[in-house]
Length: 118
Image 1: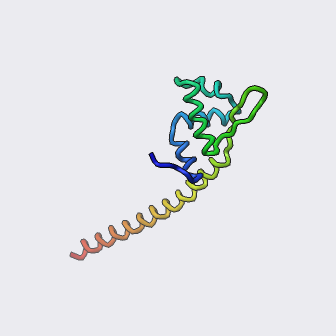
Image 2: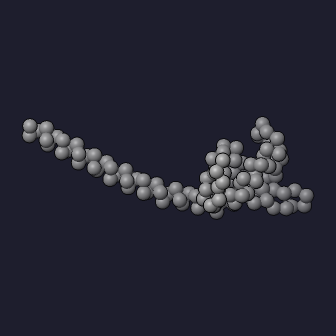
Image 3: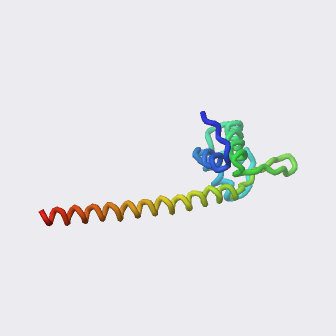
C-alpha cells in the first residue's frame, strides 16, 4: 500500500471510504462521541476509532475534551480545499472537452465537404 503524505491526498484517501464519508455526514449535523458515531454501523467501537484516526490525520475532524468524553468535531476547512481543487480541475477538464467537441465538429464538417465534392 502506498504511503500518502500530502494534505490533499490524505483528504481524498479519507473520503474514499464510505464509512468515513458517513461519519463526516453525521458530524455535519453536530459533534458526536465515538459511541454515538459507532451506533449505526455493524462494527466495533475500535473499528470506528480507526476510521476516526484516518479522518484526524487528514485533518477533517478534531477531538475536543469535555469532562470525561472526547466528542469529535467536523473541521470543514480541508473539505473546502478539496472541493476547491475539484472545481478548478473541473473547469480545466470542461475546457478540454469543449475544445475536443469543436475539433470533432470541424473534422466532421471537413468530411462532409470532402464527400460532397467527390
